[in-house]
Image (cartoon, rainbow, N blue to C red; front, side, top):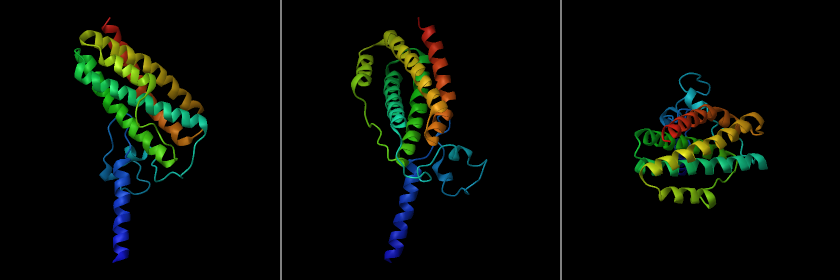
Length: 207
């Protein structure tokens, strides 16, 4: 009986781990976690979305160097900032294009944030859980804006932030020292560049 209970607990724990740490594809759609447990180890096509992202259960528990740790922290904070700002925009934006852009930001950056958390867990890296300092100040300032002024301030912030983020991810994809983090950066770059192009176009139309 004890062996049966222990085995059931272990299975439940593994199912919970995969269900919570599932990856997301580059277009921000999270993969169906129910396809993970039954997939054969090297199924190439049926589970391509699942196997694209490094899984913390498949990575050795390691630490990362200072450069990689700094990148992971900055990426986590940047993603949280854009999600929080975009949640505000979902509620306060008056321009339909701005509102649609905000919805895309919440979806894509939330998914990317979960992927980064999965990688971090596999490497014993603790990521920030909340905003602080200048990032929270940006959100507070945005909260005070209304109407068209809000739309312009939000899109200006999105364009500026994405310029920095694209540059940061390009450097990581090129010179990163951790293979899992480097792969993460390479996979996210096309989406981030698309975000930047969209932000530029919308921002220009508001002037």
